[in-house]
Amino acid sequence: MSVSGNFAHITLDNFRLMGDRLEVPGIERTLNEVAQSIAQWRDFAAEAKVDQTTTDGIASDLEELRPR
Image (cartoon, rainbow, N blue to C red):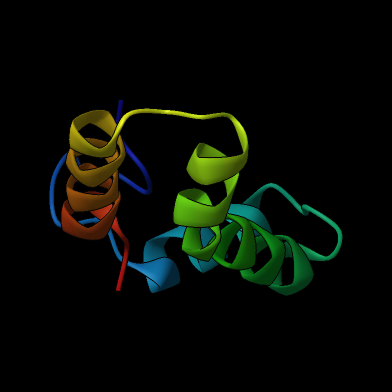
């Protein structure tokens, strides 16, 4: 999948450009809400009793893939 023509090293600006181009209302608010939810991954995992290895692996993937 590409975002604004990029398949790798996708940035928040790529999402903003796509949101603006597609006239997505509240794109900045949505990006912030998603970032806040992702930041709470470990809390969600603990509540769902996800094992530590899986929790750490997913946290690592989320950090690696996080748009900057």
